[in-house]
Amino acid sequence: MPKQDVLFILTVDTEEEWQWDNEFPQGHCSVKNVERLPEFQRFCESLGIRPTYFVDYAVANDQYGSAILKEFAEKNVAEIGAHLHPWCNPPYFGKTSEAESHVINLPYEQVEQKLDSLTSIIVNNIGVKPLSFRSGRWGVNAKTLKMLASRGYTVDSSVYPFYQNDFFSCLGAPETPYWPSFEDALSIGAQRSLMEIPITAGFNVKNFSVANAIHNTLSKAPFTWFKSIGLLWHTGLLKKLYLSPELTGDKDMLSLAHTFMSRNSPVIHMYLHSSTLLDGVTGLMNVENAFSVICERIANVVNALRKVYNVRFCTISEAKLLLSNQPLQSGPLTSKQD
Image (cartoon, rainbow, N blue to C red; front, top):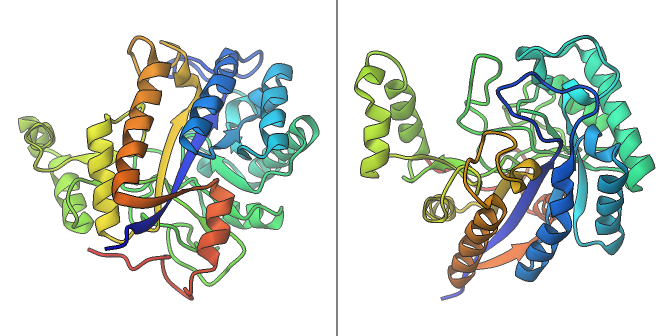
């Protein structure tokens, strides 16, 4: 029996490091983590992975960081995309609040100016015109998608499936690649200039709709009083999972990947932040030797997937081109199974 085909995408939010529970840094951002990128890139190449680095202004503006990424681009071993962190991306409009740290909450004119500034510095310092984009701290709206398309971007990856907080929501969005509407970013549209490729997120059970309904219900009082979500997690009955080696162990990532494949997903999309390649600089992954832990988890997942599926590694824009050739007119790029 032939193996099931799947595209494997690894995206890296390539950015400054700071403690995430502190104020958002604006000037003189530290980007020491980029010193680990050459080693990380060699690791990726050893597995056959072609990563996509979503680069923010602080890294593109750094002489060492931009030189490293320029070398990756010239060797064609990785893709350089754009990553907009409002707080460190000029022009500045005052101190960044929690709400304003999400691009989706900024006035259109501010996003426009910041995006053009980011695109320009990537072109000037790294030497490539980025085709892919991810918003800082997730979330996107239709106006931003339309803006991206007008500037030649062809793929967005700002949708964080099954997630919402007080400042944005991605609930209801397809969890597989889709052509988003320029009227509603979380809905399927008719345009064909820009594709949305969300990261892989879901549950350890196949019926995502039921799992999400249960999870959302149990996340509210009075069920939170009994720690119902934690009980389901520890018993393995229901786990909400994200395909990130920063957040999830290799066994749970594999469980999620297998669930997606059982739903005929064309893509497995893993992500991480470059800042977590350094120990203890963000507060996200408080383990010793995080670089080795991350690489080990990625390798375990990739090697296990290769045994079961026909894995093809590609950058996110390469995936967009491959998926565009599928005979789809109006829906997600695969049938959405509930």
